[in-house]
Image (tube, rainbow, N blue to C red; front, top):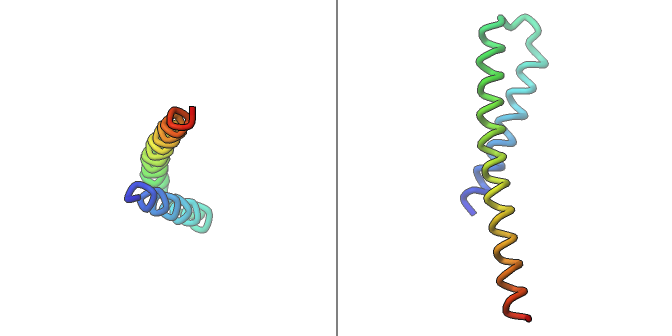
Length: 69
């Protein structure tokens, strides 16, 4: 459950970074690059959480299938 909460936090952080990038057109290049690195790291972390959830769901499905069959 904790990972799902973290996924929600990641989603909000990504939205905030995107909003900052869109709203501040005068942002210098180094700041933009730093925010891009943050976006990349958050996206990677979010994808890892999704992959873990996918494996967990698959395992639950297989366990259910085994008990029914």
